[in-house]
Image (spheres, rainbow, N blue to C red):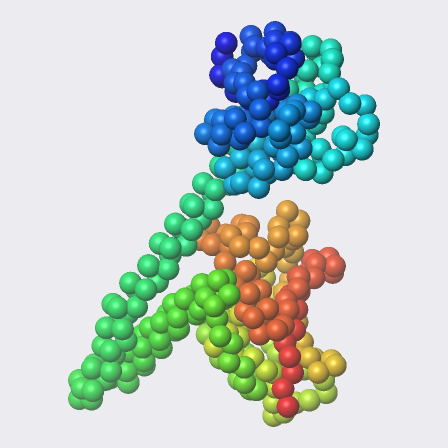
Length: 368
């Protein structure tokens, strides 16, 4: 007798039926016996069972009631149940299956059939249990990773605040600085503020994922946000001679605002991530276009670059941690862009229908 192959609870009030089942399964499985429903419930509550073989017709409490009570409790609801019955009616079988049983074995039955059905049921139960355990371990690991990332973001803000204050101290000494030195210090100050903003935005991303972010929509000119993003992206585009150009398809000039309803502080990282992706994917000397259009009260921003997204990531382009071909890529850029657009009641979509090109379209509510 070996419990390596499984432990069964046989619930039957007939000694001859118990002996038959033991003779069939006893050499392969550990078998516990209950001769009534109440004892069966007590044994099952102790745990350690891979399967319950449950007779339908028993005095005091029939098999259907035992099954019903087993499925009501968290400690026993996942134990698979196979009914044992001498009845032929399909209605009786339907009742048992609706209560949560996985199979029926009719008495008397071929021993090989009993062995096969019991073996298959236990194998499936153990596989399901192992998969659930691995999934729980994976979820725990993911939560730990996200907790560490959140703590790291929080801890970075302290020293960064000190770094932000230093340029102001240096600039206060007017006599010892050249114009070039002042320009460099201003660049350091700007970069520090940009980093602080990125940390704050990443903390907002955690709130958005958890559903705790309180959106405060306003109407603003998206052109101002895009101009700032393009200016910030210059350090990536200029060394590779990549042009980034805004095109308006609504017959309006740059002097006419392109009004959207959302949050400036969400739109900046949204478009920073997408435009940076486009620049990194484009070849040296290429051009990234940002086409603006309006349609049915919506504002549409289409970012297009030469180059194609690999086939294997197209369907998962906006999923978390999905990346391809980047040594330092985290797979969070497009995911955070998707979250930001959705939080602002908008959307973002990938278009790879034009050979050799990639377009990402962001749609946001219009403003007036």
